Amino acid sequence: MTDDPWKDLLDPGERIIWQGRPDPGFGLTTESYLMIPFGAVFTVFALFWMAMASMGSFIFSLFGLPFVAVGAGMLFWGVYGPTLTRRHTWYTLTNKRGFIATDLPLQGRKLTSYPIMGAELELIDSGGFETVNFAEKVTRTKKHGTSRVPIGFKRLEESREVYRLMRDIQRGDIE
Image 1 (cartoon, helix red, strand yellow):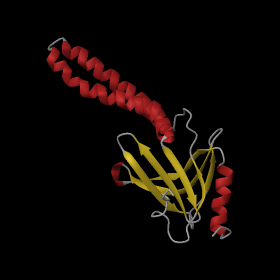
Image 2 (cartoon, rainbow, N blue to C red; image 1 turned 135 degrees about the horizontal axis):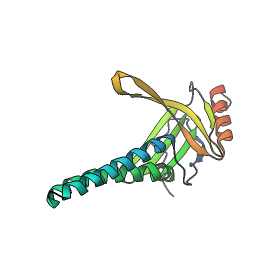
Image 3 (spheres, rainbow, N blue to C red; image 1 turned 90 degrees about the horizontal axis):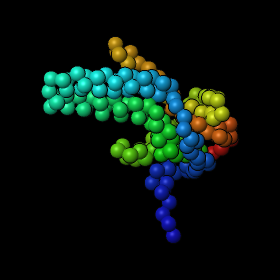
Image 4 (cartoon, rainbow, N blue to C red; image 1 turned 45 degrees about the vertical axis):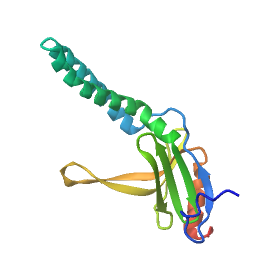
């Protein structure tokens, strides 16, 4: 008999009603379109700096390597980060909460949950795959401002069914 991995995570009376994953195919996000050009410019500038510095001293030019690595990392993550993240993400909907689990290299495992009752639901069609948002995170911005980042199940094929299930939970049709 195998142990239920959800046994210690669910509240009494809470049960799983849907599980799924985002589409694992290649795709860029809005953040990618910002990070890719910045990473490319950062990398090219660091390489240019290293080339100019090598005219004076090869050893001194090696100080540019960390900057090349940062720029290349930004470029790589901008192109492949969203796809890699989706391939390591799992979604679970219970009769009380939405769970988002990730297991990313270097970051490890992370499980977050968000209550469905009282959540403002949003169904977004993003060209082929849809997203169901049901929570938001407030982040700080420059100059002491804040920004709201939507949280939900992204790039789902069966998003309308998940959206319907969440509405049923909120109406009390699923207990």
